Length: 335
Image (cartoon, rainbow, N blue to C red; front, side, top):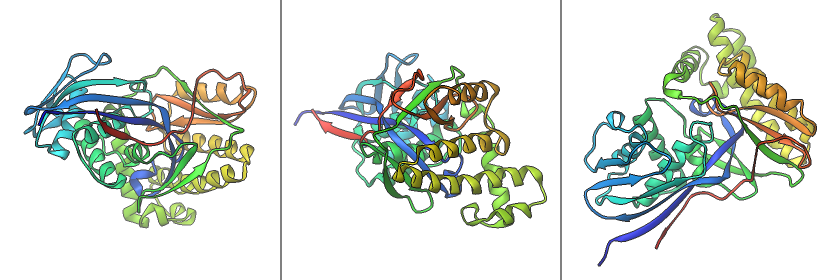
C-alpha cells in the first residue's frame, strides 16, 4: 500500500468581541474567516518536512522532537509543537500555503496548528483537537494562550459567529445578519505575543481570581473590593467584557447593529484603559475607522499590542479593508 497523500485546510479567525476572556474561562464571539492555511502532503518517513513560500526556510522536525521552542526557523516551532502533541507514527513531506496575513492577529499560527494536526491524522472532537493545538501553541511560543483561536478554526459555521463558553467549550452559533459587513483593517503594526505583556496580563487575572474567585463568576462589586488598582482594572475588563459578549450576541440576533457597534466601542475602550493591551497606532486606527461613514463600531481584535482592527459596517460603507465572511471550520481529505 502506497503512502497516503492528504490535503488539510484550516481557516483563520477574527474575534468580534471578547478578548482576554478565554483563558479565564469566560465568553468569546469569534468567527472562522474565508482565509485559511492549506497543507498538501504525503504521509511518509520519520520526519515532518514542510516548505512554505511565506517562510524563511523549511520546517524539518524529527518525530521524536522534545523541545519545540528551540527549532529554527521560527515557524518550525509551531510545526514541532504539533508533532510533540500529536506524536504521529509516520512523518510527512509537503507544502504549506496561507492566505492569512502573518502576525496581523487573525490566528495564522492556530490555522497552521489545526491544519497540521489534521494532516498528521489526529482524530478527535473539535474540543479535543483544539486543546491539543493550544498545547502546541504554548510549547512553541511560550505564550499562555487560551483555546479560542484553535476552536474557532475547527468549529466554524458558515454565516455565523461562535458564542464560545471557554469554561465548558460549549458552542452556540450566532447568525450574522446579511445587512452587515465584517471589515478588518490591518494597522501594519506587527505583533509578537511572546515578547509582549500577554503573559503578564494573564498572571494579573489569575492574581485577581485568587482574591475574588473565578472572574467568570465575579461581579463588579467583587472587583471594586480589590485593593490593588492594577488587578482591579484587569478584573473589571474581564467581568464587563463577558457581559458585553452576551449583549453583542443578543444584538446580532435582533439585528440591532447600532447596539452591537456601541458594544464594540466599549470593548475597545476597556482593552485600552483597563487591560492596557492597545497601542497608539491601534487607537488612532480605531478612531479613524469608527469615524468612517456607515461604520457601526470598531475595536482592536486579538491579543493586542498591534495587529488588526475589526469593524461592523453597512455593506455600502466606503471603509477600506478585508471584507470577511464567516466560514465553515477545518477539513481534511485524502487525495
